[in-house]
Each structure stands twice: as structure tokens, then as C-alpha cells.
Image 1 (cartoon, rainbow over the protein chains, first blue to last red):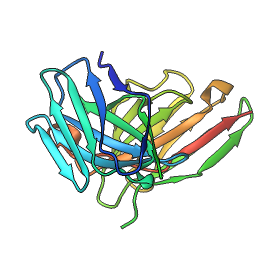
Image 2 (tube, each protein chain N blue to C red):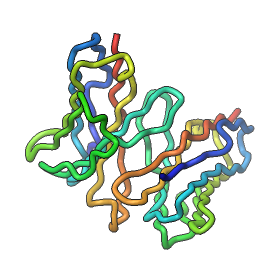
Image 3 (cartoon, rainbow over the protein chains, first blue to last red):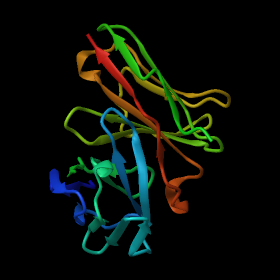
Image 4 (cartoon, rainbow over the protein chains, first blue to last red):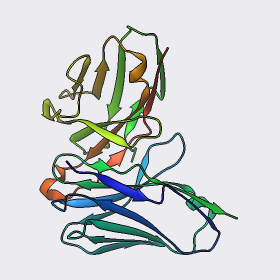
Length: 110
Length: 117
């Protein structure tokens, strides 16, 4: 059964710092991996989707990488801003569903 | 272009009552997924539906829970005879095509927060 782990569980950084969030999964047989952000009391906002044949995807200040063979993905956030404060979730898709990690709670201090 | 719409946002039910959660997917999306999020836990898959068909219900409890996605109208997640342990946030997501092999991203609604008293 697929297990997704996100480290750290919580992270606090000063505004302007670059940071990396980590995601690992136990079964490398996936079709794609998706990164989301969740604000308190809200739904999930899709950030980036990486297909299994890709190694990275970029959107603005965000860059996500995927190393399928080692079961790892990272989300890099450049020049962090207070508005980036949220919980970041990683999810892998081996078929008809996504398996989610429990997320990294990010606080960017002004 | 409205996103995934879920209602109600908050639902309070007493033990033993029925809860009905509604989800209207994004325009043009015919694939719907339901997830449950318990406090301090990750999202857990419940069921995957296409119009008039249940594709995968492997995450759905065998009793009291059912889901449908009729030809017309929203998808409905129904919980009968609710218990306190059903209290959670229930999220609906939709995609344009099946995630496999089309790699269509999931788009989520804001969820329904169910409280059972």
C-alpha cells in the first residue's frame, strides 16, 4: 500500500528566504504527483502536477522535482512571502486515486 | 469559470440523522472524487465516480455510506445514521478525464464540514 510522508511537518522562515519541502512515497509505480496548498478552513489549490516521465515542473516562484526511482519529490519556493503561509500537500497517483501526505505547515514571518 | 462547488459549507447533524453532501464539478468535468479529512490526518480517498457509474469505491465504508453522480445534477455523498466519528471535512474533486493515463490534474472544492452532535 502506498504511503506518503512529508518532512518537516511544520516550518517557519523569515520573509525572502528560499525553502524546500520534501515528499517521499513508498511505491514508485505512479502515474503522476501533484502538489497542493491548503489554507485554513479551505479546500485544496493545485500548484503543480508532474507526470511520471517528467523530472520537474515550474510555475512562477515554485519548482517541483520528481525522482520516481527513489520515491522522492521536492517543492522549492523562491523568495518566500507571507502570503505563502499555508499547508502544502503532496499527493501521488498510482491509478484511480491520489494518496496524500499529511502536509507541511509553512509560516513565512514578515 | 466557476470551480468545484460544494454545499453546504457546514452541516450539523445529530446522531442517527442522515447527512447529504453535494458537489457540482467544474464545467466540462465528468469525473468526481470524494475525500475525507479528519483532524490532524491526511486526506483519505473514498470514492471515484463518472456520470451514472461508480468506478472505484474501495475507500468507502461498507455500511451507511453511499455516493452517486447522476446524469443530471450534482454528485451526492450520503451518510445514513451518522455517528460522532463521521465528523470530518469532506472534499470533492473533479477532473476533465480519467487521471490515468491522461494525467488530468484534480481540482478541489472548499469542502463540507460535518459535525455530528
